[in-house]
Figure 1 (cartoon, rainbow, N blue to C red):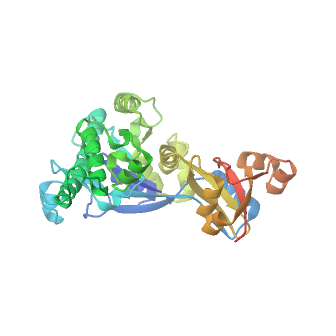
Figure 2 (figure 1 turned 120 degrees about the vertical axis):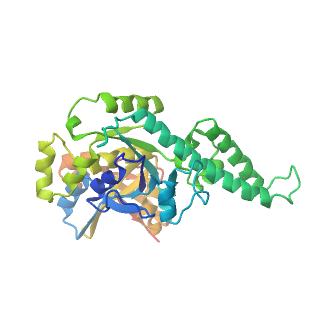
Figure 3 (figure 1 turned 135 degrees about the horizontal axis):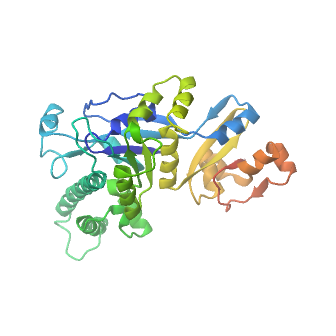
Length: 371
């Protein structure tokens, strides 16, 4: 799973990236490439299971965070070999690097603090402006593709249906929605159309989580002022929101692990930013976690809500899906309450499930298969 971090200038997106990835990127530097860091998803359930099995290997689920979208001045464009008019989005201000297109969700960082120069926060305005930039980037991608399609359709008789005409008509519909101020994810699509649109990796087609980047002085305080304004905007637009101070989180991330908990408590925080963002990103993407456990390895797996157990088995190994027979499934809460897997079986809370069983968040599964 990949989450792209976006934000306007001075919003603190790279500082947040450093906090999440424990200092893997320099602040205030941009070299025309994305910063990428892989972070394990915090999961107390996984470690409880591992404590029971004492496996040789424990593999948590992970999220790849990408810091790869920024506004660039004309001078910066020239410096990094990207002059205006050569692939830049309309209005020329916002550059989205290729790595960002492949992200599954976006973390939209919004400044909720006063800058060192004294500029007050304007969170709702900033949030709308960044959304406008993403819309423009999607429009540019559509216009580029439509231009190519029209060239390829010059020799096609009018009224003839081809894969190219189907794609052209679909993109024209999406373009009209974007030009009306709506987002790609608001376009009603049939399953085959959704698959086609997904291939374009439209930025406004991705789930988003808003991140209110507050000053240190606001930590632990009731949401008001800039954070409250952004909360109202998010409720209006249906966006989930996380409130944090990227600067403080980055400072905590650079501490030795044994000092991090103490610092968090001193700041009135219960957990680091990466934990909260991981959960919100999971929820935004509609993902759940199930587990496989044995002495060689205890592992957390990520699948979409509504996944059938045979498809979950295929994520573990294709042979498991191909030769699927049954799955022994026990929910973590019941297994823990019983004291372990064998105890849970004796208590009757582990059940045999057929391929049509829908996996639940927290399930522990043993797949029976034969190939």
